[in-house]
Image (tube, rainbow, N blue to C red; front, side, top):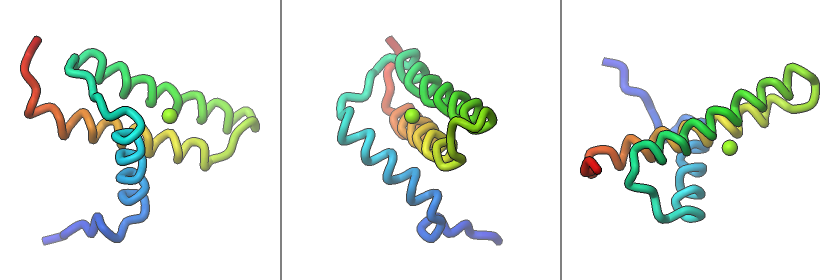
Length: 88
Ligand SMILES: [Mg+2]
């Protein structure tokens, strides 16, 4: 059986750092699922912008990675709160 070593993957660590940063900066996570989805979608939009900037020689691949990490962090935050949620 393959066991993925999350602790040794630097990208997983980076997503964890992005998640901890977001939770510290914005400790009050919204209850609304639509608001949560908007937060995630905003980050995905920033990935799209970073890609456009990169392809137009106005940005760096690191900017894409940064936005992907933030998007993954917001996806994880949504996921980890979903079971505790009550429908509005
Ligand atoms: Mg972002």
